[in-house]
Image (tube, rainbow, N blue to C red; front, top):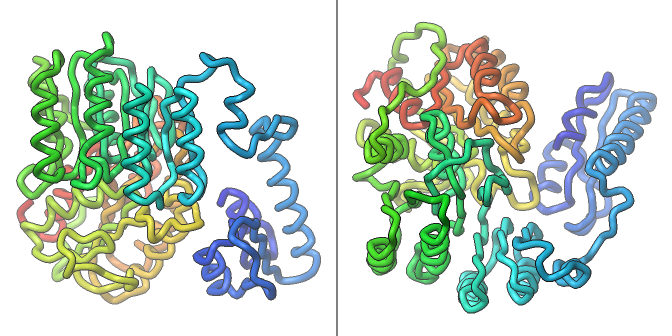
Amino acid sequence: MQVSRTVSALPGVTGVIVAMATPLNLELAGNMGLAPEEVPSPEQLLIAVRAEDDAALTAAVAAVDAALAERERSAGTADAVRHRTIGAGLDELPPDASALAIVSVPGQYAVAEAADAIAAGRSVLIFSDGVPVEHEVALKRAARDAGVLVMGPDCGTAIVSGVALGFANVVRPGPVGLVAASGTGAQQVSCLLDMAGVGVSHVLGVGGRDLSEAVGGLATLDALAALDADPATERVLLVSKPPAPSVEESVSAAAAELSVPVRSAVLSPETPDLTAAVEALLTDMGMDVPTWPSRPGPVESSVPGATLKGLYSGGTLADEAMLIAAPALGDIRSNTPLRPELDLGTDLSASGHVVIDFGDDALTVGRAHPMIDPTLRLEAIAALAASDEPAVLLLDVVLGYGADPDPAGALVPALHAARARKQLPVVVALVGTEADPQGWSRQADALAAAGAVVFASNAAATRHALRLLGVAP
């Protein structure tokens, strides 16, 4: 994505895509008029460039080559020994050289790699999605037998002993351990704790299906036990969507037996607010609840007849926005709806109240997560600006390791262009910390200068959007 963005800015270049040749990316290339004559296989790199003349085309291709070579050099991998499997790599390491393996390959290959790590006595973070649920259960049972932990599949966020893995933020060390079946939910909670002056000991992701009936909370129970045994952890917060009833019962029973207190931040119609869960935890700890950072935007009145358009990169943040907004707005359509009958299907430009999770698996097959590649969301903002429908735009921007090094840099031109075409109030939930590489204040100031109202709390951002719609939050 970064290579595509760099090359597309060159003079005379009118279109470029540098991505794996997955069906979704081939479709995107076709929509751009860059479909290859011969269909490549998904594991091949697709490089397609359209330019105004031969000179611009030659310069663009040379720039692609140079950018790819530089990425390899800067990553320090040009002369690195490459292993085709985790097992092969572990065979060359002493038994105590690494306690954790990370698997980030297509789902059909992830199970074998994770099994090798477990067999070698390593805990494993499975970033990959698309792993069948029966294989997830088998891996987690094998991990329990081996005395290690499986985080995932589809685990995008973890912090282990201060080391950020996947999409994670730079947060101060502290006494609160998180067990999370939600990546962006864990990021929101850990960042608010950091802003309150409270750090985290570990953030152990368990995968979005772990609390389902099929998986039975296997990793959640193991993660709770691990945090209970950790001397740096004094309190535990469980972040998730509602678990299956039988799983909730078993997790609650296990939590009651621990020596550390456990509080839940479970998103549901009854408890729709992660910020409130953090504030309750702070109260438990005898701490004052701070005023969460924000940046005011232009003074804007409510938009008559407007609809809510939530364009999200984080699935849990999108869910939270819908849970907060639905009582005031009624039905909200989504690709990840609160009720099945509200499913958008493939019509991401539908009218009415809409919240889209651009990080949903169906929209990330073969392409980078929207925290890395904002292309689809930028296209949606442009389409909204071109429509006649009055709207309030609600966005999340998630900072930290793994995310776009300057997300405001991509959003600001799109917001300026959109607001130049129509009255479009913009509200942003900016999830991050001052210590993140992008810097919370730097990003907030840039977004506010583009006309957005910025909040550190997604719940606060959603309620402000409702006020702009003229309804009581």
